[in-house]
Image (tube, rainbow, N blue to C red):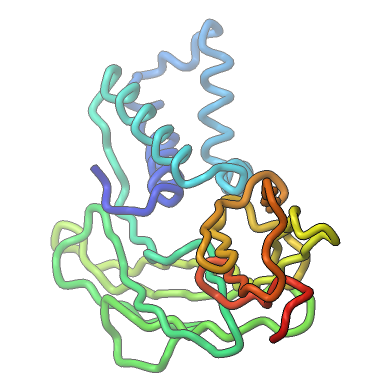
Length: 243
């Protein structure tokens, strides 16, 4: 199995599939019977189409689809993957009032051992290496925050030197929780008003998982004054108690 993160793995697989499968099928796709399949392969080769499709997927869905495509490809021909490198980073980070540092690494397919990278963007300065440290600063105001990272990877493939580019974006989110007047409905979101779906919301000692729209509904009102933490980050208190 590829060491790439699920979404990068699926994108890499689709690009490799679009490049190699037509030649492996030796002109079969030119037959009118396979017109729709040939058109689908052309769409896979379109970076804009691929990025739009990946943006709508969860990592779990992308991993499942990558497994399925790999299996289906192996039924028709040998799976041939292009050299690829990706930055292993979370899709989002929840932050409090202080910046945080997070280790970043590279995952590679088809490269010889011993590659290194020059890192740019939201990383601490360092010599060329296969790892770096992300410096994530809390976003200000209500503007969505993002940390952008780029790695220029110097590597070799079967002894031939090459340079590959890996890029990643990490959404930066500050927690906010809106509590209803009866203290039974809590709406978890970030500083920009985007819902926090599937996130861990701690109401005092109790832990809940946010549902659709970032909502948590309680059977009984939350005690006034208890602390709130979203994904482990302080997010205020239930109104009505002493601070």
